[in-house]
Image (cartoon, rainbow, N blue to C red; front, top):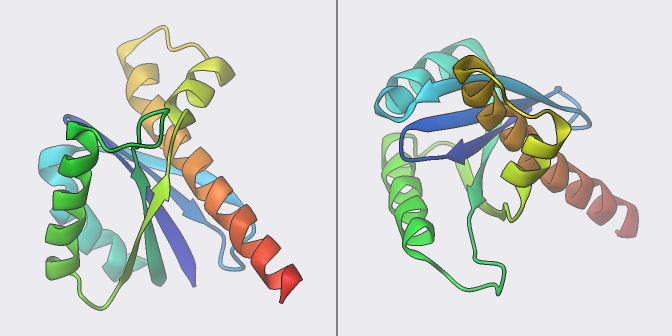
Length: 137
């Protein structure tokens, strides 16, 4: 089963998918926030996805901001819409900065795509954590 990551923004949502073994994270698509529910329904019909990792935007001090609270509300709404899926909040601090450093967006299309690159960094962090957990056990 694959794992999906979401980098939630007010206007755009970056997505990334793992491979079926849960080893690799790859940017997938960036969708408008308004289309997220429809996009997820279609994606869940096409792909076997067990977990969805949502970027959890804590402040650099580790506290919650207004954006953090908004992400929690969206997660709760998505859990109601898709209760059969496992929803996980995952620390996303600096994922957008890493995506920006990787490739500076010069066009609107590149800026929009950078959200999916940030989602891939979030997913990569989660997959690394899960692989380390399996090694320890």
